Length: 411
Image 1 (tube, rainbow, N blue to C red):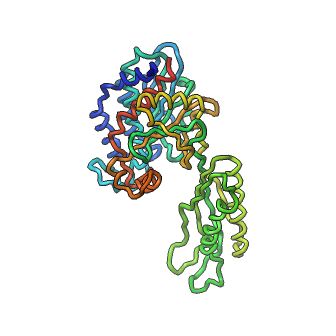
Image 2: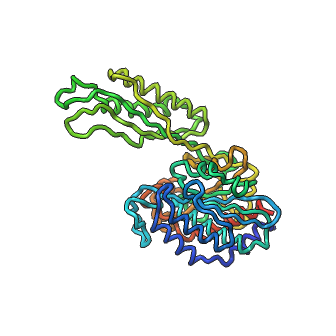
Image 3: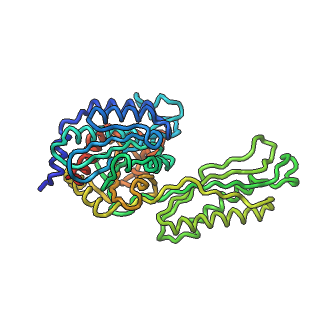
């Protein structure tokens, strides 16, 4: 027996303007905008929300968009899409590839905005079938971890409405037609750190008169690899990545300092704090061994929280997704090491469901090397790749996941 929410979702999305939404997506993809610069994207989304009948406000939290649709008594449901692109040079070769040098929608946020616009239009047009309040947001700056907090701090819930439940989804790699749910931990915490190694600069021909911070930084990068392999229990999940190392200006100049940027992915606060403590200890030890004039500076930067679905909310959402999209389409892959700022919208107490929509085109998936799903999964272009190109066939199901999820929680 199909639930009322599933039946209504299929009815409301039976005549989606797919060609129009596809054109909308291609336009967004051609014109990507970096975090807190999403002015054009925000205006495009705001225009569609206003046309659908939402009370629409721009400039929330910088460049955020809020659409509010009050439709009688009932729960308040928030639907969210992030809008920002990445500093990536696109290499997809698509006819609608980015026209902005060095900027690309390499994480699928253009698809998120398209899904949200389609869902908002369908729910507004079918408002006779549900009751409650829809709070629809286009969020800026997810990639920096600052956008959700910026909207909350700008009075998102005081100025508009406080939601009873939050719903969000993300495009990801994998054969089209699957929807990944986890009724609990689904995404990891992320923490950025910066290290400055202080040496004593001088001429490359006289290293004995210097303290070379490049050599110390090289030892440090190597030694940091032991934090996960030798200090974190095998039952814990953690990743440490050195993403940048910078030093010097010329071939024959030993610089006075070297800079290292790294990122941690953890699934508990305890592991995060243990890793930060280990990094500080190792950095100080390597500097002491090299005779550096002072200890390195270790600065903790941007951080994303863990994303932990409310179990009941996510099970309810996953159930309606399987009804709408077919038996066997909803899978639980368990938590992954990616990170999101979506939980900041929850204020530590609002229940939410967050899930993934697989978007790898069939020809790309079939051509990928590997004999099983996981081998192919590792071979296809993933988020943040210059080759990431979601299948536009996911526009309709991506709208349906949002519509059905909203209806499962509205009156």
